[in-house]
Length: 621
Image (tube, rainbow, N blue to C red):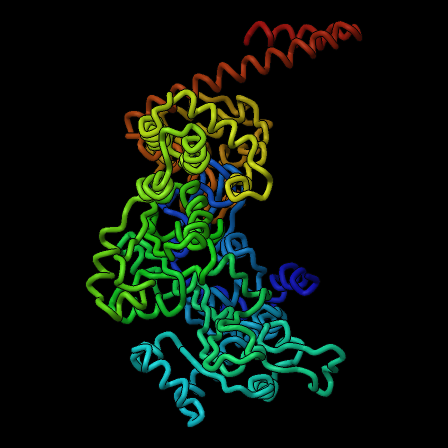
């Protein structure tokens, strides 16, 4: 944390002394389109010369988040957050500056030799580098080493083509004690970082100085690198080739580390995200081999949650690319239960969920189905059933509807799922559907739904969803008062529609801006009007480029695009006249109140001269 504070506080001054470093960060910004970057996280829509969206950092219904493509900045007028591409990644990904710097540099293709010290100061970055080297080691061992023939034969029997193995960087490590650890130590990495990466395990009593007592987590396994959405290798899954008493299970995964959190990573998303956007559909399967086989067969919008239920973070990640998901999972009770936990969250986030049903005898999963008959798998995806009819069918199956207790069991299963649907019309449809099929009044079901939601035990899946999806509220806005708000609106309209300024500026008294933070901006506009009597977007841009109020003017211009995007010049002309009249009325009201207080004070102390002056001003207003 101290290193991070040092970087954020002192680097800006350091950059002024060493321009090449500033050039590196500017090169990243120059090569990146901030609109495209942010659009991968939130759905931006055009708003004049800017882009807008609901803010990803607080809950809101009306968009207040704006992106300025020319200045390469963003600003939320709801919660007040704003900045550049670096600060956006820090906020969105929950990383610190060194990690954001590396991520954006890699994306932009900028080498950061000047920032190497800062990058290496982050253990996260060091672990990512270790993972990259480990993935290369595993992959080359699989392809080049004679002892890896058993692994190559296994993959060949699984029908993986050489180009597929290369694309997914599939690898192998033999059953040796510390082969990878010794390789990475020779590459200059510390034993502490290797342990932190999860690739090396430390025995009790091991001494880092001697490197003894440390051994590889993965031994005798086919290795599948796990990449995050940005293409960074964050972890691994290892499948054992020959199971023994000491092999540690069929699959071993990287444990939780600084860079790997299985609840936040979706296998294959780095390769699938473009196709997901194009097809507007995410296909979710269970394991890595399912994803890889689908990709090899030409279906490239496929990802896996690696055998676990979808988490809130994973659903939010998927939602960036499509609101539609089709899920394939085992039809047994465990598979359905795991799917339900993920579907709960997907429904509450407003995703359209469908279920892929592989015909009986066609294979237990995507991988097996594709090997038997790829046409069957492709057809199953196309014909995936909507989730609610599927749930109704599976829950109603085997129940006796003449037994009221069994009807209650059905209601207890389906009502919480219906309650998670965020759209009122859709939710009402399924309540009526359940009412008709159970022969129960809808009002009774609504009461039961309220009871179930109230009595859900903490830690239950539905309660968990409700807790997780609560968004942070925007902090309360500073109270500018009615006059301050009106002055803001006047300037916003004037900056968006410069040709209107000349018609109303003369109607305003300088006095209304005396105590306003916009006084300097107003004075500049008035000076421009009195000397040239001309306004245009180009003139204003030039005016602000040399002004101390440049940032303030830009923020008002962005807000104007947000609030007056649909206004024509005629509508704006009527609106600005109304605002000017309201400003004059509000200023008079405010001034009268101030004068009344001043008159009362003058009477109290017997200052007749001041009293006469104040009374004259009050009468004139």
